[in-house]
Amino acid sequence: MANKSGRATIVDVALAARVSPATVSRVMNGRFAGEAEIAERVRRVAAELRYSPSHLARSLALGETRAVALVVPDLANPAFQAVLAGLTRAAAACSSPTRATPRRRSRRWRRRRAVGATRSCCAARA
Image (cartoon, rainbow, N blue to C red; front, side, top):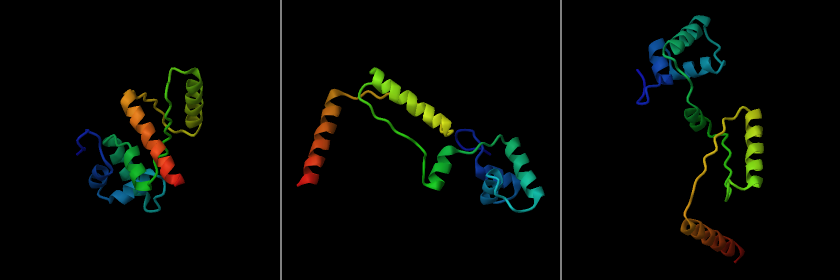
């Protein structure tokens, strides 16, 4: 009873506990105001299925990701490394997961992006 990745979903827990997905959500978020037996059953089933909430699903439901993007031209530059280190520390203090993913782009791609940005600025002034 898991999705393609093999992880149990909130729907799997709901079906096994014989409650709605909304009830599972409320129990797991500590906002359930119903019978204690139902909450205990949901927690037990969630533990048995090794359910863990999906951060992606939560982001989609709430309409926010709490993601921070930092685009720098050169990660080898110590100044940008210091900024990234500070950002990582600040995110950790807020309990936000962090991941640095360097991306390499071709010179042609960067040039096209710069030309597009210049055109946008010029169009905005006109």
